[in-house]
Image 1: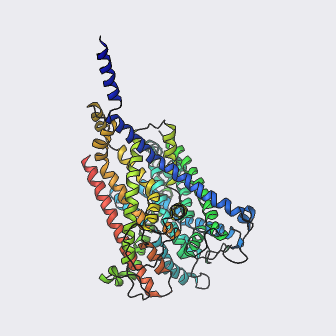
Image 2 (image 1 turned 45 degrees about the vertical axis):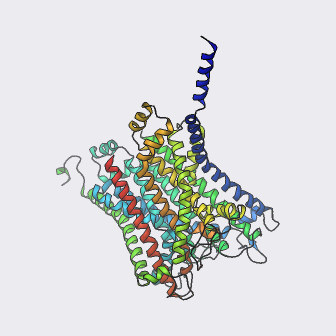
Image 3 (image 1 turned 60 degrees about the vertical axis):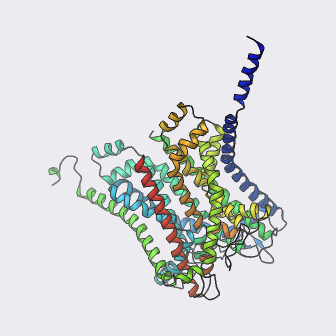
Length: 315
Length: 291
C-alpha cells in the first residue's frame, strides 16, 4: 500500500465527515433545538420580568409583603396610597367560585351525557357546539354579560340588589366560558374508563345510573378533578369578561350583586391609564401579575399530576 | 307483587332514578347550547342594523352612527400576520425537534415538553406584561404593530407546537422508515415525508391559533395599544388597534349608539372566527379521509 493511497482515503473520509450534507443536518438539528428551547426562554423571561419588578415593588418604602397580602386598603394610584391586595383577591375568588358553580355541574353533566348516553350522531352534532362556545372571544362574553345578562338579573332580583356592574354576571359568563374545558376533559376521563368495567356493572344488574355513579365516575375521578382545577385556573386568569361585567371597584364583599375588581381587571385598569413607568403604582402591575402567575402555574402543575395518575391507571 | 319480579330485575324506583339522571345530564348540555343560541341571537340583534358598507370603510368616530372598524380590522390583520410569521416556523421546528429528534427518555426534551404544557395555561394577560417589559420597553419597539405581533406570537406558540406535534405523531411510521431505508438523511425525511404528510394537521393548528390571536384583547391592552386610532397601519412600527379592543372601547362608552357599534363589530369578529373554524374542520375531515 503506497502512501498516496492512504492520503486520498483519509481525504475522502475527511470530505465525507465535513460534507455539506452533514453540516446541513447538524445545522437543522441545532436550529430546531433552539426553537424548542425558545419555550424555556419564554418561561424564564416571564419569571425574570415579573420577579424583578415585584422585588423592586417590595423594596419601595410604601409597602411590605405582609401589608400587600393581608390588608384591605387598595388605592395604589391615590395619595396617600394603599397597597393591600385583599380586595382583588376576594374579587377574584368570587368570580372563581361563582364560575365553578356554573361550570362544574353543567360541564360534568354534559360530559356524562356525551360519553354515556348520546348516540354517535348526537355526539357528533353536540361537540362542535361546545367548540364554538370555547372559541368565542372573552370580550364577547363581556358584552353579553354587561348588556344582556345584568339587565336580566336586575329584572329578576331587583335593580336595588344587583348593581350595574356585579360579580354574579361576570361569574356566570366565565362559568359558561370554562364549561367546554370541563366537558371535554371529563369526557376524555370518562371514556378512558374501560368498557369491561361498565359491562361488569351492567351484568351484575346495575342500571346506567348506578354503573356511572359507582364505577365510571370513581374510575375517572382524578381526571374529573383535574378538569375542575384547570377550570378554576382559567377563571382566575380570565380578564375581559370580568373587566366589563364586574367593574373596577376593589371591594371586600361576598355579595354577588355588588361591583368588585379582580386582579386581572386591575391590570387592565392601570394599563389603560397613564401611570408613570417605574412608579410604585406601576410596579403593582407586576406584583399582582406575579401572584396571578404563581397561583395559576401551581394549579396547572397540580392538574397535570392528577391527569398523569389517571392516565396510567387503566393501561 | 315483589315475589313475581324477575330475579335481578330493576325496580321501578331504580328505573325512575336512572331516567331522571339521564334527563339531568341532558339538561346540562342543553343549557350550554341554549346559552350559545341566546348569546349569538341577542348580540346579533343589537348589531345587525349597523352592518353596512360604511361600517367597514370608516374610522372610529365621536358620533356613534359614523363609527366604523376600518382601523381595527386592518390592525387585527397586521398583528396576526406578524404573530403567525414569527410563531409558525419556530413552533413547527420545535415540534419536529420534540417528535423526531428526541426520545421521551431525553431529560432535556421532557423538560421542554413539560414547560410547553405549562406555558399553555399561563393567563394571556401575563403574556401582555411580558410583552410590555420585553418588547415595548427593553427593545423599545413602543406600542407598534411589531410589539403587538410578537406578544401574540409568544401567546400562540405553545398551541402551535402542541398541534404540530400531534400532526407529526399521526404520520405513519411506514413513511419515515421507508424514506430512511432508502438512504435519505433524517432531515431529508422530515422535509420530504413527515412535513408534507403532517401539513393538514399543522394548517389546522395555524388556523386555530389565528382565531385565538384574533380574539385576544387583554395582552394588547397591557402593552398599551390605544383603542381610538384614525389610521390604517402602514408598517411594522405604526400604531395599531384591533377589533376586540375596539369592541371593548365602544362597550365602555355611555352612549347606547356605541354599544350597537360594538355589537356590530362582534358580529364581524365572530363571523370571521366561525369561518376560520369551519375551514379547520373541513381540512381536518379531508385529511382524515385520505389517510
